[in-house]
Image (tube, rainbow, N blue to C red; front, top):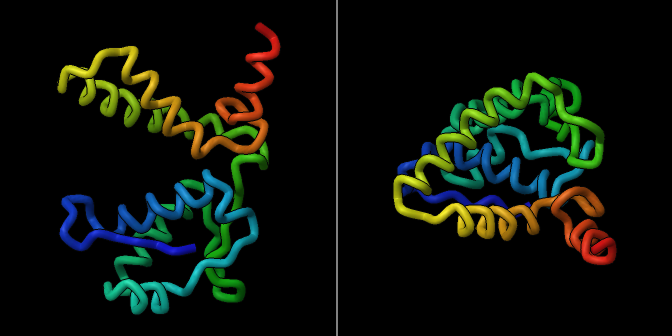
Length: 144
């Protein structure tokens, strides 16, 4: 996995690291059981303090996506095909989604364009054969 961050971004570096790992999990680039570099190694590779990487890893741990262990290090805990999400995931996610939708509407983006852009983003992230994936869209096309 190649992890790129923007040191000039308004988004905190730990959040960029977390977001990139989540994207890699969603796209299938990282799968359940995949090891991640140590915090010190990734910090050195990115030229950032290892505490910054530790903060990103801890966020992922709290979100149930990463297992941290002294023996095995940082390991991806789940991937999109591993089953249904924890019901506790939805309230926070829906709140963040609501803010993103509100931002788009406040900027004058039409609801149809929001949906189209969402589908485009989802098509690159959906688990193979799952909702929103090219395979699922093909099945839907055959049904209609």
